[in-house]
Image 1: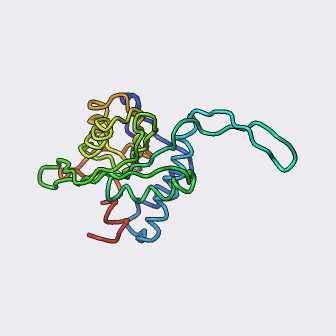
Image 2: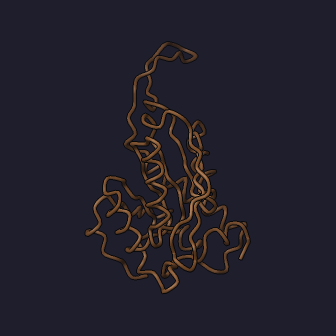
Image 3: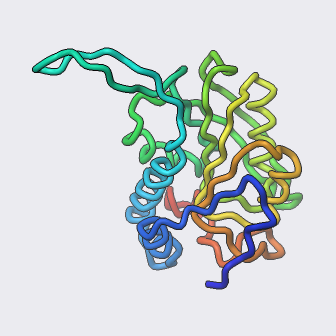
Length: 217
């Protein structure tokens, strides 16, 4: 697959770990079953979370091992909060939750109007203490950027100050829209794909992530 130039997108990180790229290739394959697609999304999300959380702040904590007292480290601040954009973002929650079982989960309901390609919101619920929490906003696809921009805007209006956006595949148009609207929000993706088609789908992409996750059309 041809590589897309990434240096013109500040705050964009393409996670090129070999296991992420291997699993993403299988995920793209139209022959991949719903069961395997769901499992692969879980696994890729977990691998991405491992990379994205490597700079979380730590604080010391005193514990007692079976042999003696010692000082260890724990993640500082309020619990990390995962916020999937419904419905496709739900597929990424379980994988990250396996890595960070203490994470809280909020939900943002958005869908894209297929005639206008604009986001329509219908649900918003996140844990309290927004200003002190680190939010991971989850959506497998960053296509036009409309839903992502709307979701970040909703979190910001609610008081969230630390937001990171995680997606599996992205298009240059969507990345640009996100960075134009929210230049300080880091974007993490497994692949920056070539472009969008006339219907707003990512090329080469992986199809409709929600339909492939839930076996719908």
